[in-house]
Length: 113
Length: 117
Image (tube, rainbow over all chains, first blue to last red; front, side):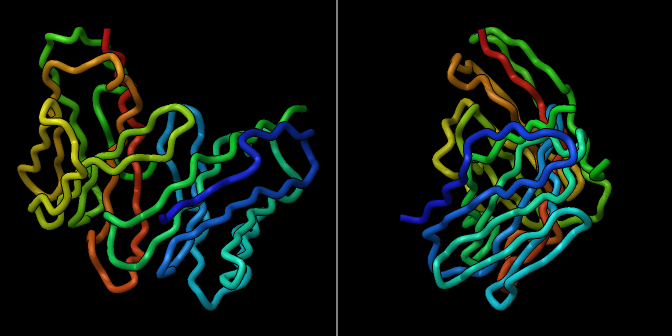
């Protein structure tokens, strides 16, 4: 069964600290993995997309890693800011189209001053 | 903003009401989607339109009826809903719904928070 699991479910960190969010998947075949950020009251916004051959990709203070062998991805946030408070959703595609995107339940991150 | 707008942002309706959700995208995309987002659950894909043709209906109850009059507009007509239908309904668009390896980015609207009493 194709699944995407994220951990932790929620996380609270102090402003300025780093954190890492995890995404494990069982989707097969694998095409790409995307991380979305969803602010409260808004729709998800794409942060990064990684294909099979990519191990690391950065977008400002966000760095995503992918290990296609172990089917794991992580999103590392450096020097967190209050505006990083949001839900982070991992989405895996099997490459066949939008009807075969597998969504995680997300990690709720709260950054406190 | 993402270029995808949704109205209304909030909706409270009784189980016997009829209402419609509206989505508009200003990105020139050819694919539009409806998703349901419930607390602590993954996003659930409801409907997919590709070049104005419905290509996917993921076993959605008939009390939800989509309409796509053109590639920029998408509606979700609601009729005799149940309290368990209360959720955030998200509209999204992308260049196409099916492309090689599907690396298209989906752009989401802010959603309509629906409460069914």
